[in-house]
Amino acid sequence: MPGPLPSDTKRRRNAPTIPTTSLPVSGFTGDIPNPPEGYDLGSSGAAWWLWAWRTPQAAGWSMGDLYVLARRASIEDDIRMVDAADLTIDLDGLSSESEEALRSVIGRLKGLLTGRLSIIKEARDLDDRLGLTPKGLAALRWKIVDDAASAGASATKGKTYGHLKTA
Image 1 (cartoon, rainbow, N blue to C red):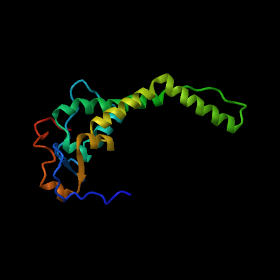
Image 2 (cartoon, rainbow, N blue to C red):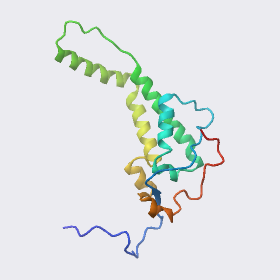
Image 3 (tube, rainbow, N blue to C red):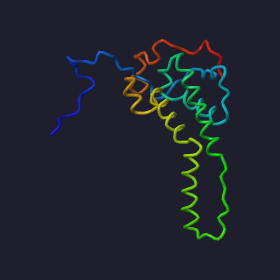
């Protein structure tokens, strides 16, 4: 039977050699930078960009992450274009159950034909790299904490985006 959960305040002799970075639960409050040149985001990509920069993880991103973030935002535009592709078939004369089943099959085939699955996989990989998933948070050794707890910690590691053009 397992014992109690380890306490964060207890001192360990075998403490991890890589420190954990505390990120504020309220998210990044600085100015949101513009996407790098060469990334013209559509409406879905721009909405994702704005959302991503208000997450707690944005407090831990560095200048080198801008291109990865822009690529991830552009994937949102790709997903929207794939989903907007119209593959219609005349379904007159079918029962509602048959029509629903056929629409489901067509939707799955559309996803395969348009490469939606590979686009989604790329988005998931980038989300991991940016710390936007539990797996990514663990790999980066980031921890989301209350704002009061992260005030003393250097959540942004001294990196600011104040020198970039902001939206």
